[in-house]
Image (cartoon, rainbow, N blue to C red; front, side, top):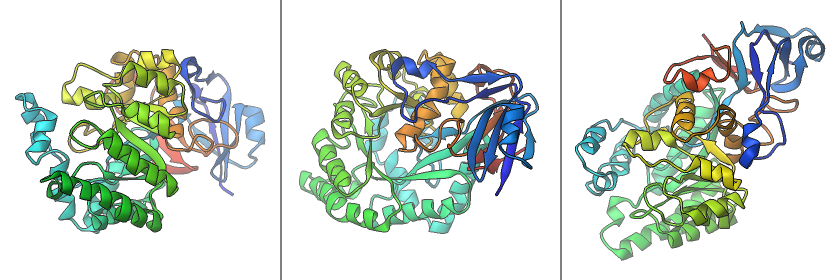
Amino acid sequence: MSKLLFVNASQIVTCAGPARARHGSEMAEAEVLSGDVAVAVADGRIVAVGPTASTAAAVPGASEVDCGGRILTPGLIDSHTHALFGRPRFEEQELRATGVPYMEIARRGGGIHASVRDLRGRSDDELVELTLPRLQRLASYGATTVEVKSGYGLTVHDELRSLDVIRRLQALTPLRLVPTWLGAHEIPLEYRETAVARADYVRLLTEEMLPAVVSQGVARFADIFCETGVFTIEESRHLLSAAAAAGLGLKLHADELETSGGAELAAELGAASADHLAAISPEGVRQLAASDTVATLLPGTMFFLGRTRQAPARELIAAGAAVALATDFNPGTSPTVNLPLVLTLGVSQLHMSVAEVMTAVTVNAAAALGLVSRTGQLAPGFSADLALFDAADVRELPYWYGDRLCHATWARGQPCHRP
């Protein structure tokens, strides 16, 4: 049985507490220990946290990990990424800078459509070779759990093989990967000519692709881009209801660019998370706050798109919602693997406290992935997912913006990133 004892940390941020999403004011209660404290790990799980002497006694013969006066935190959780893609789309950034809107780029065949064409032309081996280094970079910034979506295939064949690539990647990295099926990422160009063709794609998603995805057994969640110009509320309810009946967890891209009622639909269906929410309505805030659905905010996306309106984090927290933060790592609108940079944006743009942003990328991000009883906090019984940062105070993590402070990470007690 592998045993580790983490000692000599300047601070241990435990985020310890109930194994559920933290709502409202609870988000400010991230526990921080200092002094002569340690974390004991055995067989991939945390067995003790507290004074060094008594904690060491819980793992006799453990190998010591000297934290060297650094900060030890739960491994960060990136609960929304599109890390599986082919080429980047850097040309679109310049188009937006000249005034071409995001939805117009998509209408011209750019955006998601460009990534779809690219992925369809690549082999599975190419996709593995492209994606694995990205996952390693995510780990190098502190992530130990990463959600990875499909969604750049948009055919039964290409969506299934995308999910199979995620399965292959899990065997190549100690990171915990959470596969999400996003066949409803966009209406493919070949189905956009008529209303009948569009309805045919929704039928394909529900009657052919969904059963095939469930039979494959890789995806844990179904997601849909519920947005004006993409999938309507009615289409989203139809597909997600079918996915829930088939046993998949639910997620929604909701109210990103325009108010559409996506947040309300997520709460109605009991989705694990509603993501984006920059254009959420007051009623959407109220309904999310009254539900167990996590509001996953993606400030890096709005920052990169040059939008001045961010999701209303303070209103959501004040109403009692559970808020998570994630990178939305993707080739078009948020090409970053830097989750601590998202913490910076959480503080500077969303006006969250340091404790709130730490809760948002640990406990609440775990809840957004259905993992809140397994990871997201340093407490006995939880997975040994840890991140060590080159700083003496947790407030430095969002302060040194853009810097890579992560010294090392472990997932289930196994090293993901080391110096």
